[in-house]
Image (cartoon, rainbow, N blue to C red; front, side, top):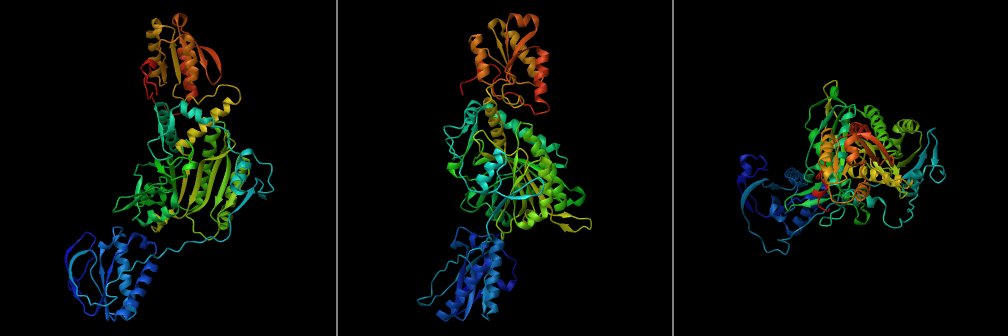
Length: 602
């Protein structure tokens, strides 16, 4: 066998002049391709290959070995660095066994000539599939109740919890199936009303939104951003891609944690994953940031389109989707003590947000180990006392090196009596090292920070789910359901009695619009009675008929949906009432025409 290097490729190794050519006789030539799957099990793959080479040398009577990189054997190549590392390791291992070895240079275009004996074993192939050693858990997962006074109670003995807590215990700790839901969940009727639906031409679990739903979605996204800017941490708003290469070790290692719940894309040359949350993009950016301890804590935020390959039978409109949008905030902290302090701040805001909707959370607190619980017990006990409620504690099985220590899932009980996770916060001690994120401490030394993960209001979809579920709960009290005014697409509906009053009605609508209020005008030929009924069917927060009397006196009889009552007010008073209801929440204009006669039937 003889070879001569001709031209470098972009991944070529640097070699000495003498290594550009080589020739060996009575040699076992090993054409080698290193594939992606070999990276995670490099040591085992290399050992198996070297052992087989030595056995084959003996079988064919070869006196020496030539290792020849040959990428053409596969289209699923490992990263160049991984390939070269394995080739060098093979070479070194053979030399250790006193075998004469020559290795052709990696990453060069080469010509070669070969003469082969007619031995039965002169041409053979091998495929070594070493498996990465899986971490095995020790023992089983554990559940118990931690009360406000610090008592730890068996889940089997706990009987006095809220409906949400008891549902969590049954589902999470005892493995009980909930009572089957009879008929279609009621919130789906509101999804249909506001144009939130599945896209039948896509994969299972992907939503589409008509104008009302799209407006609501974007307003929630705006609100999530507003909340994050209110957090007392210097904030960095970022945007990024949803696709990351599995050639990157940090990405692959992180992806392996989520297994078959990841979307993967194979282009033929490379394999990619669609991000599970905003972590990959934010961490990829942070590894290039020059961070000082003086700048910590700091936050990074993106409303990130994320992808989770949920079971098709488990998808649930607005709640469990395969494409979701995560308002993902990461807070970078110097150490675990600083992380715990900021953890408490985020926890308080998470509770504030759900209580603003008239709902309550119960906590499922996950720990990666008993050690993590012991180190953070005082933290979670402080939270239990602050919120005056116990927590369901969950230990993951011991023996697995999780990247996090504490994770709180915040659950509501919905109108179907199901515990639903909405908000979350987590302490991450591993990903900074995995992605190479560092900061300079007081002595200028590089340190790995601790990172908090949180979605304060949950995903955009789950916040919408909470709003719609809350509206269903209001209806169950025997009054009209309603949405908060800031997110209701139709904040005000004005209805002229006839065409004579249309000009005046439109003028009033324009005045409201200029003051940052979404207002529609029912300029159709329908009767006043039908217009009024339609405004109620459309869930308009405020609705008023404009006729002779209203034009003359300037006083409007306004139906207020949240009160299920009529109130007399001027246009300025109507403006003030809407603005008061909206508070400091975000505003967007209509995503469809103001005039009903111009709207298509969706």
